[in-house]
Amino acid sequence: MMFRNSIRYGAALAALAFLMSSCGLKRHPYDNPITKDTQQPDKVLFDKAIHDIEHSRFEIARLTLQTLMNTYDTSEYLAKAKLAVADSWYREGGARGMAQAEAEYKDFILFYPAMEEAAEAQNKVCDIQYSQIEKSDRDPQHALRAQDECNQVLKQFPNSKFAPQAQQKVRNIQEVLADSEYRVGSFYHVKGSYPASANRMRALTEQFPLYSASDEALWILADDYRRMGDRFEEREADAYSKIVRDYPLSAHMDEAKSRLQAMNRPVPESDPTALAHMKYELENRTKAGIPGRVLGVFGSRPDVRAAAKSGTPTVAGLRPTVPVSVPVTAGGPGVTNDVSAAVVTDASALDKNPDARANPPGQNAAVPAATTTDVTAQNAAAQQPLPSNHVVKLKPKKQKKTKQKTEPAATPAAAAPGAAQPQAQPQQ
Image 1 (cartoon, rainbow, N blue to C red):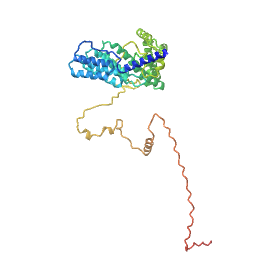
Image 2: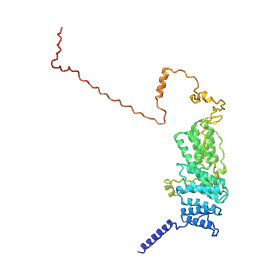
Image 3: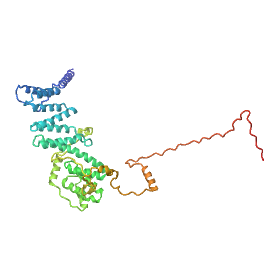
Image 4: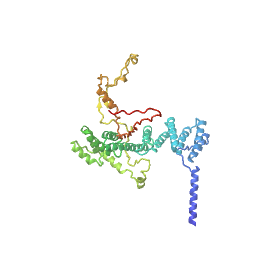
């Protein structure tokens, strides 16, 4: 009996605590309060708004802060009030709340860039986008936005206390972006599209050197060049040399040395700095527990445990590159020099000269008269279907069976009464 009463008592306390927290009675301390003890009207309004924010009464707090800013436009608490409006949206959360918070934080940085809280506001903007990053096989929109906002913390506030946190977030973000490129390049490699795979892997290894699987990407890159032909042998050897020099603890280390020796290329020495960096990363890599390995498949958050914990991430991020299989001309890869421009001095040239679009380049030569055979071949080619990546199997048309109707033989019409019957002719 006493056990049942204790259970009921505990359940009643839990229900009471839940109701108190849901009614706004639970206090969440504010990060940037004003400790000045004064009874000025603007300070009273600010303290009341902060009290409402701490008890999750966000709409009431924003109305109070708006009253403060409209009534006391020269108050010393004006900047703090504007930051508190942004914090109220941030604490409210949700898609609408985060969007409003980002806009308010941007306005605060614009109006008060020299204040100490400006770095915190920019870090909050970084957190807003960082919290919405999804896995590497999904839309990278928030990852790209988060990379820009976190880099802005490092660029605009390099000496703030939020700079180390922002730098680690950039490493995590670039781990997600690099893994996305690695998945695409691996897919092209398996499907046999080696130029496309080499383009992805080359951009990945050059622009994201802190990626945890860069050595694996270099190995696939070397295999792409090997399969693309002998004219890419130099690039293949460079990829093997980079594995040996920059990733001495890679699983492909010994095989890369063997390939270089088989190609009669010099085998470089391993970089001691790169060796120390790889050892540090392997020792400080976060290991996933059993719940994380099981439940991580069903979540939308990316796995950044393998992200680098040291090193300076690239600021520019991933930039598209031109595949090495594209022919290189004097103007650069994939650039032709047959385009010219001139100033037209005759204003009536558009009215007198023929339209240039009527004669595309390469079709100015005289075309011989087409014979009957050529016209027949052109008509047959025009009836052919357009090229497609999908083979369309046409079903043979069924021929309709036509039934031949047998008409009855003509019978002599019945003789009308009184009509003369034809006489049979005598046989001769």
